Length: 313
Image 1: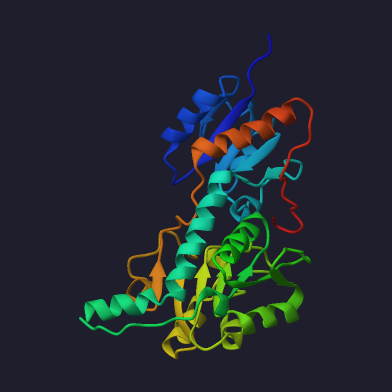
Image 2: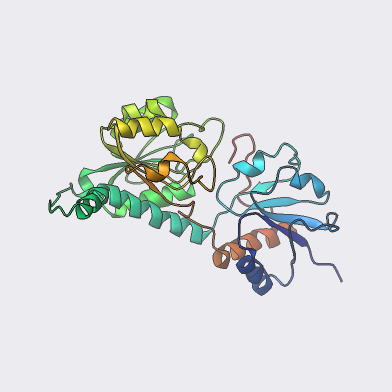
């Protein structure tokens, strides 16, 4: 009789109860441990990770794979002691994709239909009907055309928006005009009345939402950042809002999380804050996805959705 493979749940800032319940229901063949699993280091073969402290993975000599709880893997790859031989696996989860579709559609429509202005009018008891263009008269740009960006592009197309996209490598998406490279980034900025960022955070994409990009955009354009806080130069966004170049921004991710109570973003009327909940990973769907990948690997198949460490995603 073979022993059950051991998986470590190493996710800080996450309620582990629903995750452990999902594993108990769906994975009686997996021995799941809570971090830090002291005394079991030699047993742990797999890990589900989110914001684990630096140096965590060097403690587990039998580790064969690390699965990210979320779509981003930048905190895992930033660990200087991350074992080179251990593959890191992105979370590709139907629930996460659906959540991001909903979030992007909601906030693109908010900016498109000028709901911030309507809320201001209500607070001031003003009655001033607004007539925004139809969606077909509005261009939305998407930075990042991976699974999430592609799904959001499809949703926005279905609502009638003109959609363009930018990515590191060329993509061919029906109905979407796509761009690559520095010239392509400048072009998508010039076209985007609403710009959605869904890029992975890498050395090449850090600080991509900066003054140079904002200055290229149509005056009064809106930003939706659901990528990473490290994509945004915060001071540049504030300056662009204060001078009217950027009309509004919806921010779900920040350089410091939780966002400190004293941060200027909280009280900036041009900024909508959401607490990194654009597309939470849901245990009821994510555990099944992870287990299918893990069981295949245990049976001898290659892992799916492995991160290319050189690219950072």
